Picture 1 (spheres, rainbow, N blue to C red):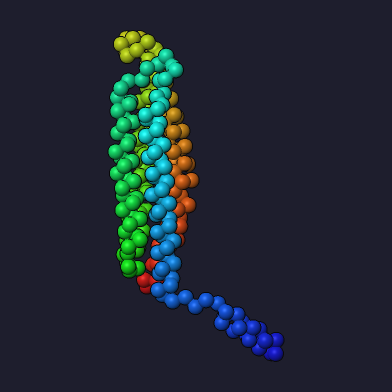
Picture 2 (picture 1 turned 30 degrees about the vertical axis):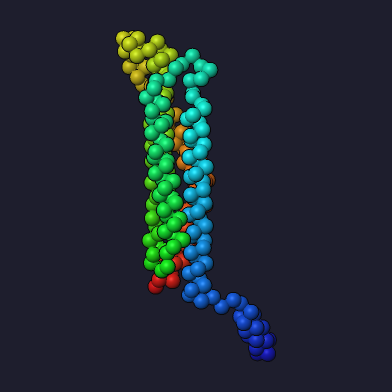
Length: 205
């Protein structure tokens, strides 16, 4: 019994030394963590936008090769810039909304919007990347066969099957690589936002 009393006294002393966080303190902590995560999402998107513009302006996959890719593939690349600009704007708006919110409910809604925006951004980029790889591979294969007119005249069923299989495999690889990159870049930040959301949900109850 004496040992038990000593343990209780020791625990009480330790409990006094622990920080006593109020509702407001916890909210501020969650706000700071969430704001930091969304800010980093915005920074990463800015870097990605810059790299995308540099690649489009100074690199072309047909440079130094005999195959000259058609102009519509260039237009496809240019289309990605306004899409990326839109999402950069949305990421900034999400950061601004989270930073200026003043209630748990508002913070919960802002976190949900931020996570939805990132998910939509990843899905859209994977779709665009997949379509770009399909069009490019089909064009390159047909060009190697002598061009569209020659291919249509001489192509057999196996040639169409080869195009289909290669396009599917290559697109799957491209989308898997893109998914891995985005999970690496945004996955950690998304998990932090999810954890913050769960903690705030407990506070709301």
